[in-house]
Image (cartoon, rainbow, N blue to C red; front, side):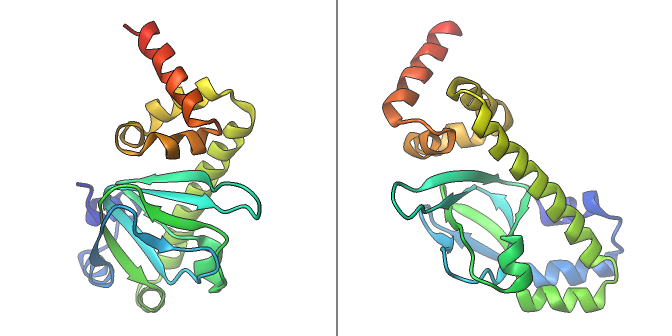
Length: 193
């Protein structure tokens, strides 16, 4: 299990008192597999720190099937920055792909920390910028890499996703059908046997 305390200290050298204030605002929550944390059209009122499990972000095109665009693994902080920061409706849905344990801070709790800890907004901004850059890089690669490369990259960068997420969702993420993913997995197994 990845702990919020360790994650925070890796971002900034918070004092013990600051850590106590932050951790007091991040309340523990448990979610069952398949639970929605956020759905298209809702306003994101929370920031989640995922201690255990996997979340998936997906878009729901007007005509067609949902497209998984990103996975969040344990040890990551997550929110829809635009929806949370501006308190406007989100354009993505967030669903648990496994049972999850998280620490969650509300928008109001976040605002209390803004007033109590001077560096808090800057630290969260840096985390958000880094996370957004990772997300953009992953989405960009999905546009120009072939399915084989995308799947191998997913196995390398987020092996927990490959091991725990249903194959249909993985196929959606790398942009191929489930039968195509099954053939790809079989080819890779033969090559590495």
